[in-house]
Image 1: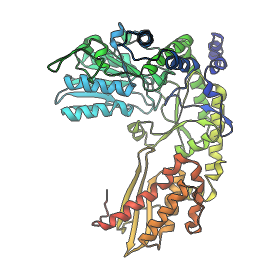
Image 2: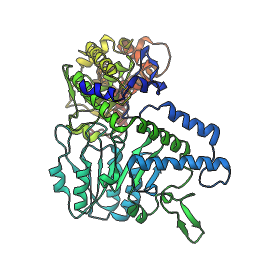
Image 3: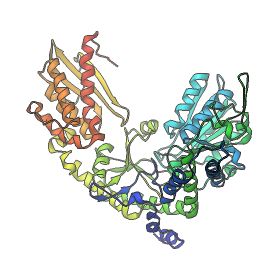
Image 4: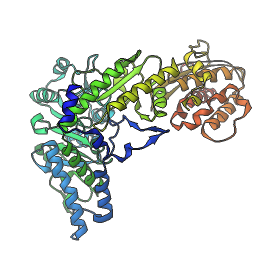
Length: 415
Length: 147
């Protein structure tokens, strides 16, 4: 608690922050909403909602084409987000930042464009045992198409990747290593800097799935030396349907376009098309302009609080929550990595997660139940599903107490 | 409020499921899987002519899906294929519409609370969908290893 006091003393006022999230001020089934599903999607502060409304009410126009005032305003606002993303991820240039729908599209773009060009029969792609389906299936599809092989870094009982095994998997046939920075199902923070370094020594390219890291910890793609890094706006208190793919300019320049269409060209004739320069080469069609502008407001909002402070506060929540859940007999936390984000995935003896989820919902508590799009993780821990409480900087210790009390009610019904 | 869903009979059948075992001499098998929640169920049916002589199941699922499979296997015994399929329709209506609860559902009316939990309808119907696939398999060459 002493660290928490220092976080609060350093200016982290969660009650004030909650004022920025109107959605939190409601009751569900007559109880105050306790939202513990931020790993699925984060709630949106008023600043983000306002930015999207401003675009639709005041500045709405298509971007990159018009000479009229509204088009210039919306283009400027949309492109401003790219600048903000550059600061958020510390990329060298804005040209290395591609707007995508989200992490899933970011990975698919790389698998499809970079992968088709660079992966050949007999090559190998390494992923990890804790990947979300979005960082498994695109690589599986690529391997199937090319006759390449998918290798998997195993993990230990705590849900940590075993780097000695990873080392053994790396070889001259390894083309790509694609790993989550933070696991959505377990909360594990992977040592991606080391993972990247090892891959580079083997001559492989690395993609980091940043969907679960970017909302919680500061990321510096240059310090990590990541080749590709991708995030989803909606996990970082932004809107859905917008995300960022970072790629090193040299890699992106050498890649063929992902989709063809408007905005990604220089010159089109029926004989030949010359593609646009980065980043537009990968941005065919009218993008999610409102989403992009909303994401810019989300970056601003998160930066204003500071990811360092967010990480420190959430870590306190994690410790508090871990202790609270550990006191419940018959409850087992799945994912106990030493480096962990604020995710509490758990099972209760003899009680299925769906029943837990339903009983909690009736008490106003929103948790995620199921396999969390990470079926191999469930298989590894021999559970069909888990209940996951994922925390964000707008959650409170009182809400964790409510979760613990709710689980008491669950036990009352089912034991 | 949540007690409307988890009535005593459902809790009893989920904690102590009936007919929860493999059946060596079953002549209709089917597997049910709910990819959204990962629930798996294997259903065994022994038909004698047109009559369901015996039914059992194995699987892992939530209280609702386990109780549903347990009560379904109980209610099937002695029914003709058509009666079983009609019961399925009525059960489905019970969960998804506002139609008045009919007597001929017997103990199965205990699931009427599921109506108010749309996300849980699939849990209650998994066993019944699996039954349909087992019974419809009858028109084809019978296999004890459907999947």
